[in-house]
Image (cartoon, rainbow, N blue to C red; front, side, top):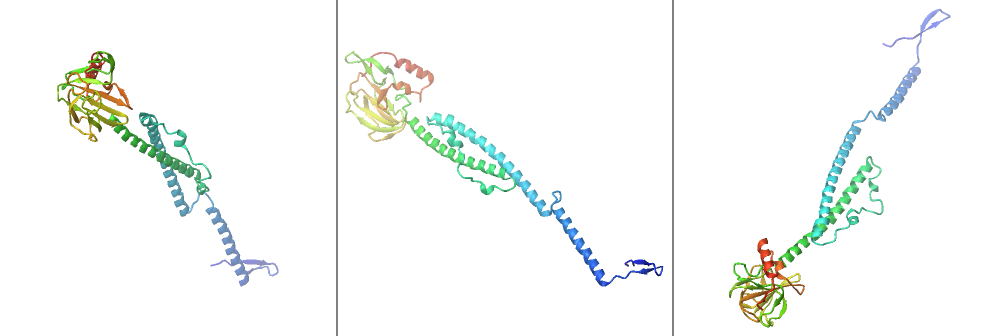
Length: 325
């Protein structure tokens, strides 16, 4: 029940009840409502814009932003780990692989080059944590570029490995007659006494003394270019082109086990010891050519000899004596 209001009438010396009109009551109620609405709105705006108080939507967005920050932080750590791994691979690439295959290293400016020109990241500006996002994007793009360069480099290294394997297979690395089959190394590479006129002449190969029909083995993979007796002094002989500038000659044979144009592998039997051509006794005259120049064959006998056997052959082959051809 609303309280009644009174006023004191001096003339009648008594209290009289105050009676408000409908208009006054309406204006009073309207004034109260408008005042309440105004102060309520002001209070709501203050609350909304107070940092300490967030709406549920703002709280959800804040949690998402924090989660993104954590994810970006983890991504940056992973990128740093990848950079360390890539740096290690690049170090090996430049200082081991390319040195081994005698190839120039990739210039550091090419490996580490960034992206110049116009601002590539303007679409990432204007956001909260834009600096972190832009920096992470830069790292990711540079790392991607470095990986592409390194991938191409490894493709090149892989090709070099294949070429190197073929080159190693082409080197005449085994003795053409087994130690168990031969009698002795009769003469080595260098100045020797000619068996026919007794003068000192350059002996261009090694003479392996062995019984007739002793097997002769291909010193490495290659193609037979000649198997005939149409070369002065060599008698029946075989020539093999091994590639990469390497050739071998096997002279004074009794018979052939191959023909011209045939592909052979290291260790294949290609012929048999004889005494044909300009020769003094059954033996194999063996020559190695590199880029058309005759070289000492004994330097290539590392494929089927022990260190002691190689030292012994080196000592015997270095002795000056009379050759057999």
